[in-house]
Length: 111
Length: 113
View 1: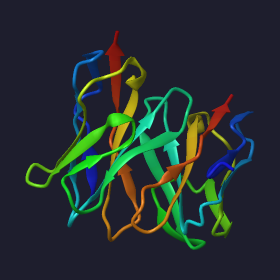
View 2: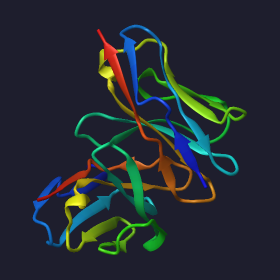
View 3: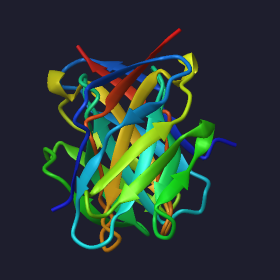
């Protein structure tokens, strides 16, 4: 009964490949996020959706495309993976006036 | 634009001593402020938040934080540190009128026995 779950937990892939990371929350929240944590542990917001609508799109390469099929899911698709995409990607969700709840992260390694 | 600063990359404290992890913020209007902790190879765990009301907020594992509007600070404190408190701590801020949650650069807390 994990509140925010991401799959896969680990992802190792070659440069140039296309991959997806999935996120699901069972908290009934209406806002979901993707964050990237780099090797220095900085957390950078990438995208946010509210009720399936994109509301935040930071300066992220357009190789990254989020998709929210419904309020409970927010997936991240990455095309033409590059070495610099290697990081830990976190999904999070919240509702009005509350803190964000984070998933356990997906460690992406591009070789 | 909103921002958060954690001026210390690392804080070292002896077990049993009080600890403080500093955080200052910049946001238009009244902020929502948060502290999270991250253990190695884990996600972020929520510790406490300030939304409104009492400036001193208490959270998980004996941590507390004080909202100081005049100094735009939200320092994390604990009266008596435990070795198990050793982890990476993040301060975060959100403008109530916006959805973006901005995180500080993190402070590594190390508690020596």
